[in-house]
Length: 392
Image (cartoon, rainbow, N blue to C red; front, side):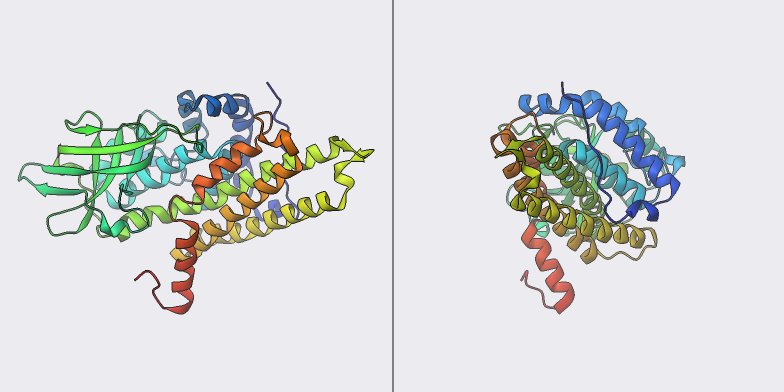
């Protein structure tokens, strides 16, 4: 079992812009990842198993709903603290960050923002403690980038709702206790429902044979005449803007998280380049290798600052959906490029489980697609700056 020697790069002293709470939160997450995630994550990926024993630890470090108020079990932290936790978790593995990101932004957030007080009191403390795990059902087999076309629907049966349809590519679904499901009512309006495991007709088949996010549990949500109590409808927001508001929070977390993956690849490549001897000297002494490393730290630094600024705007309630979209797109692309360059620097060793780079690269191939693909985010920026809608 290899020792986690990770050292985080901070080329422009970004730490000076963080307060003491930010640093304490980050260090707690970083120490936990080094102690609990790094020693087991390669084996979990090779076995394609989600390490469920980590759920309690994620709760202990405040990774579930860190910005949710303490009265509902959250830590009451700000948006930068949330981002730093996601950065450290994805430094460990994108799948572990996905679990926390879904729980926080796609399950707890909509219950907190769109739910009523009874729903908040009933679900949020258990989700924050890890006693309960949730998932988010928006994507369907035939509707990914166009969620408005969803066909999952529910009918008002007077004393309950009758839900039918299916969702696909759902993180946490195989073991989730609840699902936040977005479906159309009889008038075609999109609304959110809390669907609970054990409801008759509700099943969660697991997706197998993945080459990416292998330490994350992915599956489907299938609804066959599921009777959902009326008190499980999220009452305070509907329309497509409701699930997209959740995705804003999740994409913001991804923007921070992928910096962590990029940092891990850079740190691994830098350390390896100083130890690997070819032609009589460390490969760190060759121009092409220095070019790769210099470009890596430059792109990480740029991403750190745009993401920190986005966190400030989030704290002030000023961040726009388009700004979050730009940051998610930029940072995932940055991390993928760094992972590929780092893999080349390690040569054949870069594809082995002795180093984390190939695992990060495969994971990032999913992250660049989910919660808005690379090209869709490009068009969101295009719409924002031109006012012309290229989606229609």
